[in-house]
Image (cartoon, rainbow, N blue to C red; front, side):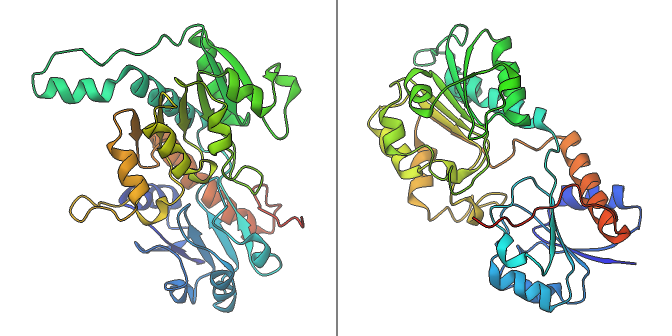
Length: 329
């Protein structure tokens, strides 16, 4: 029986993998994240199963290879935390490219509705029997323009949701899919004309800080920014400064560029040391959630199934449909 080391394991991970595995693999669950300090734990395992906030740099890749690991199975879509170049020729890397685009797109709309109509503030007020609605007004979404950056599967679902609200959709993608019939525009036009901007693109060298001070300077002062993709797409300090100076309507963030140290963990007793995140969380027009957009029963089931299917394909010698391959720049 092949042995699997799963890192950054949460109770829901273990529950779904045990349900889907049916004792086909011997899975050992580690709560710790995979990094240079924990790579020694991979010795004797055929597969390492990792997540979005594990730090799989060159040293970790080399350590896994030296320990006999043959396959790195990412149980997520993103792999910006993996040194793919270092893994090339040493360890195969697979991922789960689309576990539930509906989960993420629906959550993005939920964030927009909440931050725009102040639902979180209303909830907190009424729990204290405060039924005053002053300061809770928002804007109609009908007839407004939403800029969607990234038109892959999640972006497409989000576009459909927005059209259901009667919104005009502007789209931007490094590789536009003209067959979708969207109104593709350049970034400057999207920034200038959008009332809402929602990010659905992967994090790459080309998209890192795609929302920076220059981009924000082109936006409407009432514009809302929604991010359910990757934290590094936004320059967090530039965003904070714009919000403090009231140059944006607000932001709803399910991801944060320095989230690895904080997200998925309970810091309520000791607080956090990231000043930018701490300040953002206190802003009245900012809503932050802990990278939970994917978190539905359907998505968790798909993650477990596709991850295990990826392992099956590797050990059967079949084509790896979800392999992540290094491409020289």
